[in-house]
Length: 116
Image 1 (cartoon, helix red, strand yellow):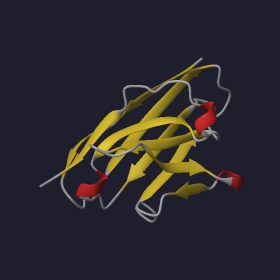
Image 2 (cartoon, one colour):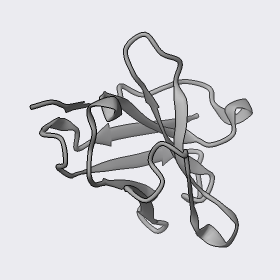
Image 3 (cartoon, one colour):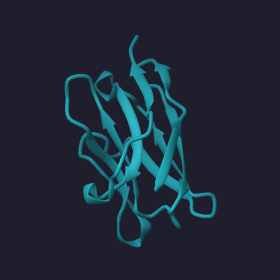
């Protein structure tokens, strides 16, 4: 079983920035199968950022150019640097595996609210 603990969310004005962190523990040996997801009110959870081949970030179209995924493999921790935040980025952000078949449960997530 793997546990994910997210942190770093908050209230930010449009155009602002936040950096989210996620620490994983349990039966996991590295970060490159991890990803960031988000769920906005009334919407389905969506994949936002993951590590692709060559460990390069891959992003949803809606966040491309604004969000950056990174991580510390030794600490089993990933980050999501979010810039130029928009109201439509308001959501609960979760980390988990990028492949839905690998997901067994979700952590608490961290709330990001973009509002003036």
